[in-house]
Image (cartoon, rainbow, N blue to C red):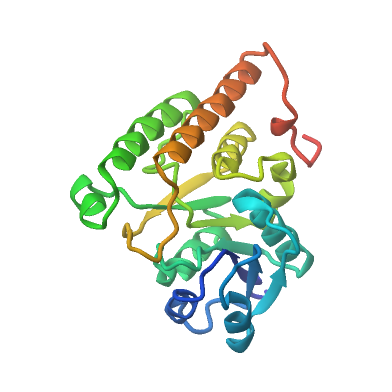
Amino acid sequence: MARPKTIVVMPAYNAEKTLERTIRDIPAGSVDEVIVVDDCSRDGTVALARKLGLTVISHETNKGYGGNQKTCYKTALQRGADVVVMVHPDYQYDARLVPVMAGLISNDICDMVCGNRVRTRREALAGGMPVYKYIFNRLLTMFENAVTGQNLGEWHSGLRAYSRKCLETVPWEKNSDDFVFDQQFLIQAAYLKLRLGDVPVAARYFAEASSIDFRRSCVYGLSALACLAQYALQRLGLARFVLFESKIPR
């Protein structure tokens, strides 16, 4: 049987200082292609990505974090991906885990895999995760697990791997173009009974790593709770939302 085609997608914004380090950490021979989608960076991200021989797509207008991912997944599917791994090019996540996460997908163990930065409180805080983000992360994760019946170690990681089936089932095109896109996707996947899993990954917070401030973190958290409320209403049969309508007839 042919080996599943694995594509890494990178939603990029001002990642010139960290892109090459991230690429170097992807184990040689573990992926077939790396696609960088640049969201109107003001630095040399695009030029560097091309120099590194990566596939580059440049947005003409800034589409936001969620909007960037939509281009990532659409392009990966068009290029025949069987497994898609999203790695942030800001070096916040350990790209050495790409083949591990892809293996859980290609061996039909999971439909979607997330990185879990909170193996222990000590590790997460030692990695630079702000205390308020750690607290919000733990509270939201516990609540999301309780409502959806999942048992993920973390719901708020940006390191993710997907099967083609997952991307062709979840209606992610209807999601927000902002940061809550990630939460919507996970809640949708849980609703559609896809198999979710996670692997431990170190937390990395440093100057060049992207991170949202306290105000946007609050907006993000409230938006995630709003989506979770929609999930609960639909599960109870009290309302219906297009976010949870599978793209494949069920």
